[in-house]
Image 1 (tube, helix red, strand yellow):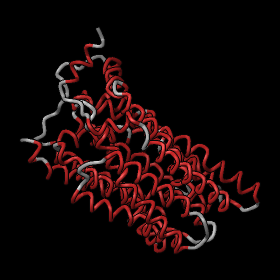
Image 2 (cartoon, rainbow, N blue to C red):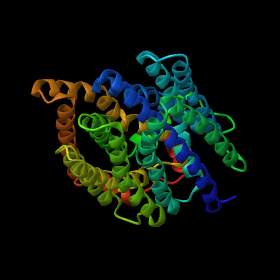
Image 3 (tube, rainbow, N blue to C red):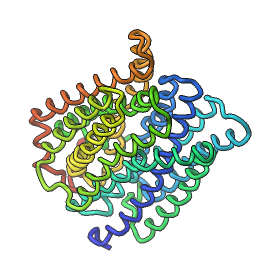
Image 4 (spheres, rainbow, N blue to C red):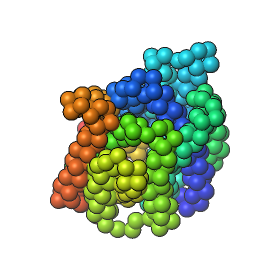
Length: 424
């Protein structure tokens, strides 16, 4: 079956990840709120986010190598299925009594470890299924699935918490893991794996993946700049909630997040239908610049209408940036190296999130204490500064020649042979 006939399989796989994203968003929102109500600390919330992210990031590179050596759909099934164990552990602790912080942190870490298998395999599977012309539309839908954890999960979680407690949310999330595993199994049928019959040594495969990324200086520069972008966005991701919770309740927070994330929904749908045809670098830096403006003005005052509007602006610009970034990377990597290359790309670019998750809560608490504005004021100041920095980085990116050149080049599939010869 050709790639032209595989778009339906992609849609089915995407639907499964869409549902999984909603379930994960429910748990993330519920546990974050649970911890904040219990401790009142932005640092404790940030630590939850960090533990849900760091193990997956650390394991992403070896997971990417596995994605090029073995059946990518099978790895997705294993990663999705076993990551549910962490959520199940937290649920059991909740059912037997009030879960302590260390139990929540442990369950989150377990879930993150196994989810490391998912991301490189899922990203590489999109390349397996689709043609280059379909990438932009597919990326729009992927952005839409990612936005569901901000668009749908908060308002659903807010409603569920008003009629029940966090245990119901965890039960729903556990059920979504079963569904996504079934969907991956269905898609797996009829798709041949690209794994070689005799896999190369593990370390050699990792080295080739790094060479695929570092071989083009513009690509490596783009990935490094992406790490800075993730740093500033990570600060906003962690501190947006304590900022709103400092003067509003959880129901209002859910409404704010849903309205703001509607911006991503609208533009993701547009991109899913039309895609981006050209000027990917220009669309990338303009999208990031607008996101930076929206981020800063989001925290400029404690007015729900202003917060919702600029939150909408921030999220509406993201799919344009994500779509362009994904296209520039995907078309400059050999198909046979997609898994291990995306493993390195994800690891390097998302180191920014690790730093953000590690320092954002501490920074907000410290600034709030020094200025006597509390955690809400400290969070606002940090978010505004991060938005300004994101805007500056976006403008600087527009002038980097090697990044602009990526739009006019793409790596042919047979370049894998040339990369391998560098071993000699």
